[in-house]
Length: 204
Image (cartoon, rainbow, N blue to C red; front, side, top):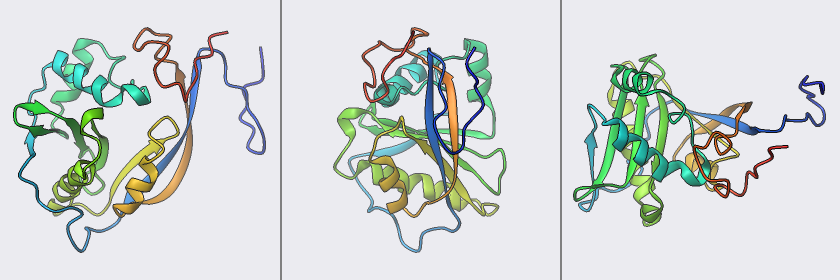
């Protein structure tokens, strides 16, 4: 069995069947002085009070498949139902007409330091400023609460290479880095093997 001790000055082998990401945490310590994006009349944000599990998982895949999002796909129906019903968690849908084009989730478990836990658009909606508009909605919601002292999020090397630049352009600043290791969701059957080729499957 190989030594799994993390080497902080060199390489550490990751076991076959696992994936590893470098995770960067970012924070915003005060509300922006001016809106991040102009108002739009072609899209609206709707609170998703009681997400249907099938619809939730389908949208989660639409938004996150290219980046092998899996955090909500490994839960049982009951686990996911309880998680989404937690009153500290708020889900929102950016809508174009009757069609959801992304997802936004804020978590207020610590009211002074809410987390932007999920944020993204379906592939066809990327571009044209919709991402920045959606971030403006998230920031406005978080900072509208009088308890808020810090808004934070994290991104990782499995996400879009544009994510870090986008978040910093919106006023977030990096403050911590971590390493995340987990089972490869493609080997669990959650996504096809060819998904996210920038993170190749290594199954041994």
